[in-house]
Image 1: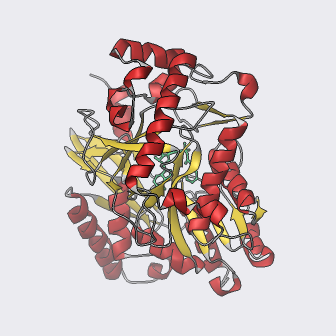
Image 2: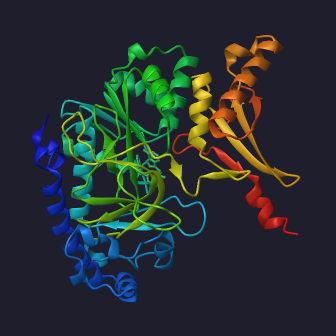
Image 3: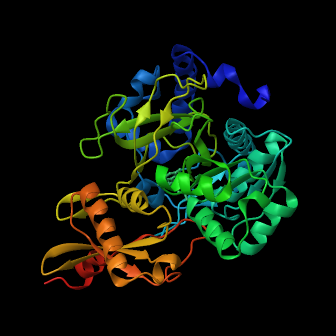
Length: 442
Ligand code: DLL
């Protein structure tokens, strides 16, 4: 493996050494943000914390949290810690409501981000001999450019395909010799479907691995993608606010994503009490950026629900691993008082039918009772089956989902291809209760 990218002294560092490095970088960062970012100074003053009170990572808990609303309140550049003349790039989150979240990078920030993305590629076997095919969207979204710079840093041949024009993507896989792909799992599923429809065998591709992320996906979906594209499918996580893809990514063991802890300190908190939870417990993921210059977030509440595992991985890395995020606190559906994540439904669906990768959830309130309809496209090969077979298929889906989430759902089978296909992040939920709450108040 390319040791310049792998950096075993960081990825396999004993915990005490990592903590020393983190402590040094944290103290320096807190001094910087206190001196340069008014909103941080005001928050710290209000909490009665001074930079000199932060002497090691053990003091992290003294610092106030940062939330998305802080970013909105200081839109667009109010939380930048460097003069704008030092900023060489901006990205923005795709926020569906309100203003976008704008993030900025100095040249050094871009270099570190590229290094993290190169590490992510190296973790899945990437070398300079690979052809890295980037099908995340290019633009303000961080997916495309983030992985692009990582692939170039690795020295691989980078194919900036971006998303869309799916038949051409498959042709490029075949003709250009793409060996590692980077795309959302839902886009991978759309490509697999297209290959099946056009009788294109995975054996005509040369893919060995893929980094799939930007949205939650299950182990069941992993198996489907591995089978459909003939590669090893790895998870990659990140968010624009913290830098973009490759804050964390899986290694060959596929047992959780190693966080680039030399740049981002993770914590898990209880989202209600805000208390820091012990290792191994599930809660909301919080990050502190200890090397970022332009836009360093401190104790940023991601809203992602995850678990941290500190045991040494079989690959030899000691970097803490985050298990697949289950979803976001704001994506969690509360149905008749029960917390439900779309990913639980995906896992149950695919456990019955591994081809049921296109689904959509409609939540509603009827006569004061929450309802959840799971819409699933009927597979082409089931269409010709008799009504009794289709009914039994529907019952099996219902039974699996009901027992997985503990709430009764209704299943609606749709014509094949009736749901929109995703090229980026898939939209899987429509909650009509939100509309009703807004417009139909008594
Ligand atoms: O999605 C960055 C990214 C691009 C990550 C490409 C991985 C690959 P945002 O658009 O800011 O950034 O969205 C960030 O997406 O807080 C999670 O809720 C979700 N997310 C990202 N990766 C994963 C993943 C990019 N592997 C938000 N599993 C995050 C589950 C993920 N959710």
